[in-house]
Amino acid sequence: MDLLTNAHTTPFLRWTGSKRWFTKEFINDFLPKNFNNYHELFLGGGSVFFYIKSVSNYDRKYYLSDSNEELINAYLQLRDSPSVVIGYLKNFLNTEKEYYKIRSLKPRSSEKRAARFIYLNRTSFNGIYRVNSKGLYNVPYGRRSNVDIVSENLIIKINALLSEVNIMTANFSACLENIEEGDLVFLDPPYTVAHENNGFIEYNQNLFSWSDQEKLQEFILQIIEKKAYFILTNASHQSIFKLYENIGNISKLSRYSKVGGRNKTRGNYNELIIYNTK
Image 1 (cartoon, rainbow, N blue to C red):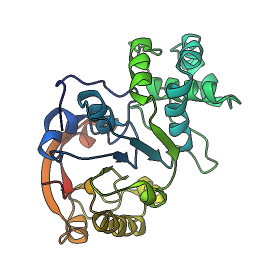
Image 2 (cartoon, rainbow, N blue to C red):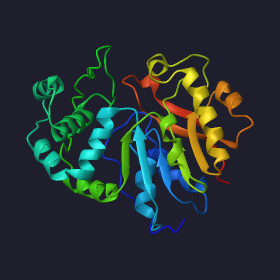
Image 3 (cartoon, helix red, strand yellow):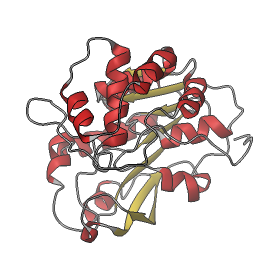
């Protein structure tokens, strides 16, 4: 893959289900030796994209997408108008009063929307992105005193990495036409089932149902038909094993999770990596 260095730019967002752990320890075990263009269809915090773009000197196209319009707007504005976003961030304060004031805003400009999104992400409880039935962000204040709201140097690095990158709001199923033979597709969907338990994750079930998981499996078969590579991450659960038992390879990895406000929700979890890159 023509690696330049082991150093890479970190994501600018805190994101539930982030794959930072994957890029720190395991990713090179799963990347194909060579691939053409790169696609990330459930972008979130973009850990894998930032790793690959940082360490590779191969001249390829990058396609990033997610169904979260606010998330994608933040990426677009850091690509196109980083100085404007930084200017807005410099005016925000990390206080409870300011947090709920900013949370209640409905900015008209795309740049201020992006700044609001980044601010709320950095100062909210655990960096969770959650909206109510009316589509309004409703995560409480995080009470984190030592927060760099602006992170100007990081945003400048992010801007450089996003230069000439294709970024769009889209469901994964709308992205097939961009995928060509020899490309790599990374997919990190919302987990519908809990790790090695029998139940569904209620909130994620609303975002990404079991029917969506089945549609994703069909989509991966289409990726294979195009003779492209894929890497899929998902919960280690018997239902996921069964869904992909005859598709590519399946590896189980253990990682530590600290998502959640109660200690009982934290600990080591197994995750599945399903891939056809080796």
